Length: 72
Image (tube, rainbow, N blue to C red):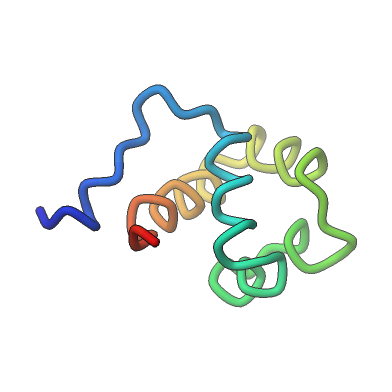
């Protein structure tokens, strides 16, 4: 696994992961990469966390996107 792929989820809260992704891609970029309404319809960290905590497949996609996020 390369250094960019070695990003670790361990010790990261879902909120920290989501915040870092939004900083990197913005809400529009998140909605393009993962097609879920909480990223495209009036997005916020709070509403996204509520949805992701109840939806394992969406959380898995967010975690996978975080792991593949290149070091900036």
